[in-house]
Length: 96
Image 1 (cartoon, rainbow, N blue to C red):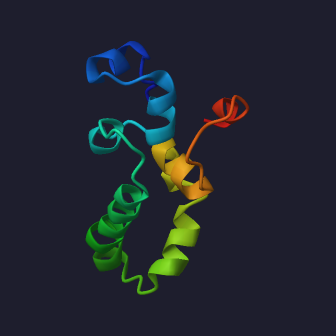
Image 2 (tube, rainbow, N blue to C red):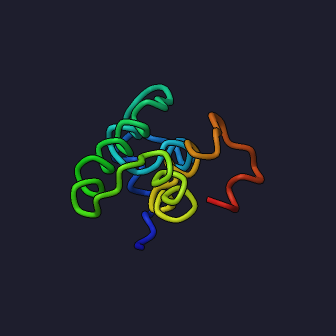
Image 3 (cartoon, rainbow, N blue to C red):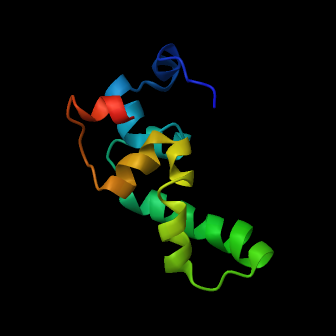
């Protein structure tokens, strides 16, 4: 994974803390508030479009439990969502 330079956040008018909390996907990053439904809808869409048909996995809940420890880490917004964070503490920055 390529690390995103903090300077790119300026182009979106976002602060570094917002970039960590919301992640790098523009629909989440550009919002004025944190929208947990964005991440749920994205995961639902991913499951329906890319997983269920290809791998014949029928139980979404089991798949999401398997998915959460590994795949969601591609975007810090998903990490924050899965951990239930709606704000960041200084000690959270290290794990992101």
